[in-house]
Amino acid sequence: MGKTAAVSKERTPRQVGAEMRGRATETSARELDRLIHERTRLGIVSALAVNDSLSFNELKGLLRTTDGNLSVHARKLEEAQYVACTKSFQGRMPKTEYRLTAAGRRALERYLSHMEAIIRATREG
Image 1 (cartoon, rainbow, N blue to C red):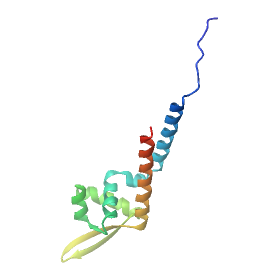
Image 2 (tube, rainbow, N blue to C red; image 1 turned 60 degrees about the vertical axis):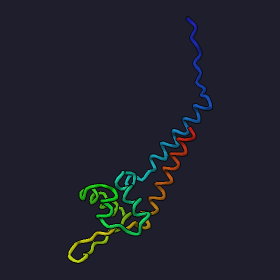
Image 3 (tube, rainbow, N blue to C red; image 1 turned 90 degrees about the horizontal axis):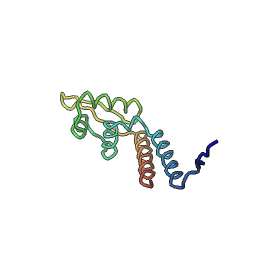
Image 4 (tube, one colour; image 1 turned 180 degrees about the horizontal axis):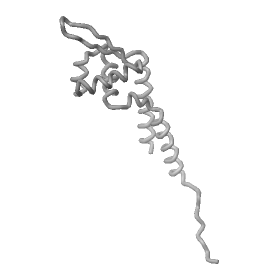
């Protein structure tokens, strides 16, 4: 029988650290609120977090999106009760106003905390 080289299954501290950071990043990514994580919805929630309310047209201009795209994403946030929508008339023109709810603000805070944890874990690598 020929000699075979012994294969070490021990990992270096660097390998262990990288593996742990990978798990932390993976766990944090799984905890991300997928509803907010989508770019347009994150834009809506972020814009509303720094404004008491914004009209449909103001949001559309800020996010540089189409009527249909904004409408679909705003409705998803409304269904999740992250955003409240008020419809009224200004003269004869319909006006749609959005504001961030308390649940939406909490969801954004959780999302930002998770993103910060991912960034920290990545920078520690």
